Length: 107
Image (cartoon, rainbow, N blue to C red; front, side, top):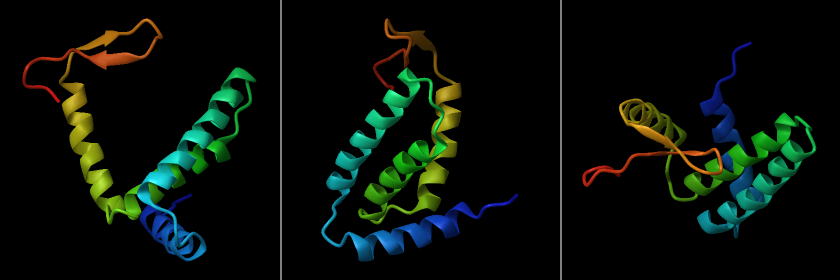
């Protein structure tokens, strides 16, 4: 199965701009927060609902799209950021998340 994510996202953004004309980058992030809470509840309930993850991704892309940030630019940044993260030193936080060890020049 091959999915053209860029074409799919262009279709989603076009639909979103027509359907939610007054939404903003910030309001899309607010919606993302509520979607993340649904994913968190599913994790606690041991429910694996891939559509909730898709909702989160849609909200994030919606915020970006409403700032004229393209999916292509996000994936280019993704590749660069992955390389940067691979080169970093990481430390485990008390909540089992991880943070890179900060130096005066890291961002």
